[in-house]
Image (tube, rainbow, N blue to C red; front, top):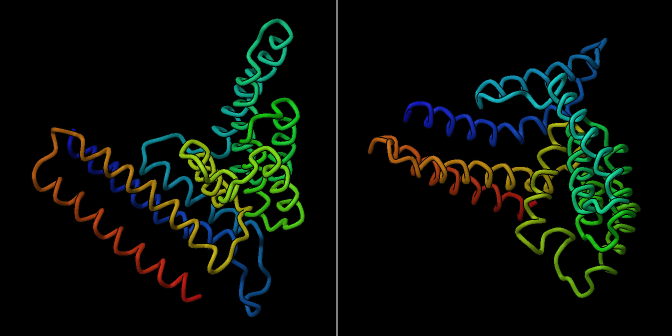
Amino acid sequence: MSGRVLLRAAAFGLAAAGAASLHAVSKWTPPGEIPPFDLSVKFNLLESANGLQAALLRAHPLFGVHLHDVRARAELDLARVDMEIGHGGDPAAAADLRLLLALLAVRDGRADEAMRLYEEAFRHAPFDPRPRALAYNLCFLCGREDESAAWRSAYDRLVPGSIQYPGWESDKTRELVHELVIAATLGGVNVLLDPEWYLVMHVASKAMDKALVAALQDKALSATERLQFRLLRVFLDNFMEVEAELAEDD
């Protein structure tokens, strides 16, 4: 049991560290002296990295066929919920499903489809701040400055006086933004460069730290394993402090 927990925690660490690497791969362009370049190479690099992470985490890879299956089930659920809304159904459930489908679309590299779903959620749930916040953050990640400004204005009208960026003022919505950042990176739609790339590292490190904290709750861990987990947390914390300083210098 403890061995599996240790492996899983290490896998989370690799996945967290790999988020920045995947970001780099998604933005990679070949040197001019290597003609011809097949764009499928970049695609294969991303898919191979995703598959390796999934194997380490002992989870279904959230791409390809499995991503299609998850999306298909969510679409069926959304169609059913939409039909029930006129008969006492729950509009909040429809909003949740649209946000889920938007996240899956981002993970699949389809930013335009995600924006369409955010706009639908915004129209169907005008007092829910989440669609506006997530649309703003996706536009920011994709480099759509004009659209992000428009969504920022829409968000400020609903949440006046907020001094935070949309979605960052509460733990609940902040977690949604974190998921979006990782999905955008894995989906290859994140165009952030230095120093903004630190955002990806920050979000990934938080996910890793959360996994390590959860692993430490296992009472079956040996003293050596607990020490290893604590050392990993210290290493991660020190590493992120250095990266934060570098980001500030940039």
